[in-house]
Amino acid sequence: MKVVCPSFSGIYEPNVEIRQFPDGDSYVRVPNAKEAMGKNAILFTRLYPNQDSAIFQTLLVLRALRENKARSITLVVPYLPYSRQDKTFKEGEVKSAEILCETLREQGVSHLITFDCHFLKREGEFEYGGLKITNLSMNKEIIGRAREIAGGELEIMSPDEGANYLVKEFGGSSMKKVRAGYGEGEGAAGGEEGEIYRGIGKMEMEKDVGGKCVLIIDDMISTGSTMLKAVENVKKGGAKKVICAATHGFFLKDSLKKLREECEKVFVTDSIETEASEISIKPAIEKALEQM
Image 1: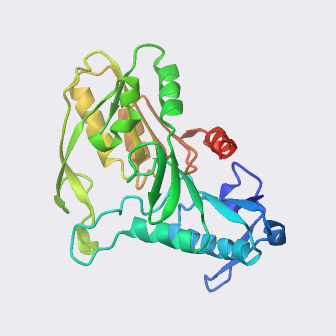
Image 2 (image 1 turned 30 degrees about the horizontal axis):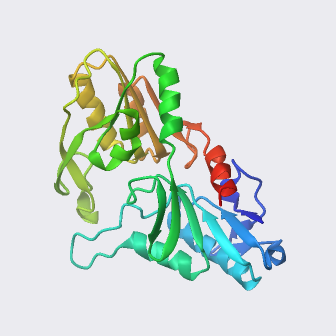
């Protein structure tokens, strides 16, 4: 049984009602919830943007399925929010990623399917927060598209070692990203909100890219600071053409504009719908569900 939230409308036809009352509270209804009785329900939703309200709305949908006695619930979430918060660095911090996964499990999710989850760092099956997770990757599709754009030889790189799994099976290499302290370096958060992100101190590259077309691929593009630094690196190394791509595109502030000014091409998947989305995750979802 497919249960589709409105946020997934670009991929499947929604059959869940989600609205907001004038005071901001969420109204959620699953009209065909009774059909879930004794069945394996598959819930499709995007949890970005507005991730906090989207997560709560998803919990309400999960409750409706549980109250109507669904036998199991598989949750398909292309981008998993809080996936960069799986560790603590300062006293009083919490592992937000773990809390989210625990909460989903407690609310009836038996299996989560997601894409290029930041803290998992490879494709495969995992358990985190007591939740079974299938982490799919879009690296093959992204690299295939980049090769079409390049029209010839393509040097494949990730901007840091954490994304090495995206490139290693294609003979690619990874730059070494050296983080600055909190609130320091490029891309750091400043102001009264207070040193939340660590900026980029420097980025090192060993590969010779002189005269080559280079693809820089990452799991996500957020503020664009990592990508822009990586582009600067390969251009200094003499690259003749640069393509930037990722599974998840946030493009916060004016980062898409900045990247387009520096690169021949910037593209992402539709895990998050943006004007740079060129690759559909639908075939990968359907293949994963067939193999369940």
